[in-house]
Length: 277
Image (cartoon, rainbow, N blue to C red; front, side):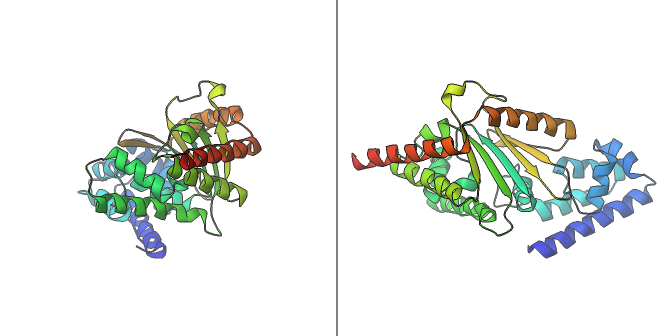
């Protein structure tokens, strides 16, 4: 669905929410209380500024007794089958974000991955998958990275734990290419990357991937991911806490200059491994 037509569809979703809310005799604040979001969020849904999560759409259907209308239309608009159910909404938000900050504890973030690296990650996660299925998953992940090439690309700031440089996903040649790709994006000033070194010790939210997304016309959102699951967080207090965790990680990380030097050193290490095998 093209961006313009998708936005028009969300505007229809919001207009229908407003109409049915008013028919039910509810204010934005009253409906918000019943579906466990703020009245301001209801207003943003109605103006198509912000997209609701599926659980909110389900609760709206229940409160307004709309026989699944908002769930069905949500799924048609945002349930992108290219991605796991828990990630479809995040992929949509990435395209709208003006700033994306990530902390990666073990695996290079999807937006920075090369095709061979992605393929190795996918194959490790599903060793019995058909090659065609893996190829499609790789294409879908690389498609997301287009946003970093656009003239209107978001500000992108990643903190990579040193483990992401040292765990040899796909082998030395794949890692050399992957880390060189990141280094090149940094040199071209398209992204900002810091490395959180082993020597810095433990960090907040140990083991959790963190992603923060900011928007021009909507409050920020946080996303964390576990095993075959993800949590999209938009409660302001929770997002503020996640931001604080990210700030602590970023403060303990190496400077951008030292981080780039470490990444480049790791590239050379992997190239040496390749040349001796």
